[in-house]
Length: 239
Image (tube, rainbow, N blue to C red):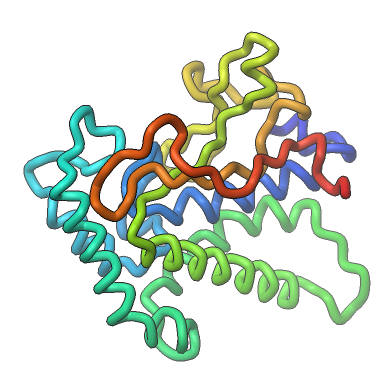
């Protein structure tokens, strides 16, 4: 990672990866290789706590369960839709206007990102100093929280596909990102920094969105339904 940040040609794309990973790793309800603790989510913490109470004594509920119970996930889907409807005014219509339980976690994410971003920040004029930069970053993270709530409100269940098809083509395996609860970005399998194993053309900085289970708790075959396409680090900024 330091190598990528040290190179002016890859620096902006690497910073974009850090921001996108910070947002998306906090955006899913289920533990799809990421932490879903109330203190590290962009979803309303009370929703995460309620969800976790459904599985006390059973271990974490994930879409990677060997034999997921369709009935359980169908009920979970209904709970998501009902909760999102009842909380629409708080977390959509009037989001961040007054009290918003997501604010604490957004500020934590901002404090995690700012030391890195500040190192490479350039003030173009006196009116665009640290305060303005932090305000813009906070607004971006809030948009990420709104995106997380939108995904939560849908009947289906989702996953982000960070796998590198280009790396797989080069015989390096398709794994790229793994969260260790701190938002760090590392290569799956080896635990080494991605810069030491993948070249810029092989590093995904924005994943595809996959719909992997429908609202009736039925897993979709193969990759499920795909939305969007992956953006690789070497393609950042290209039209």
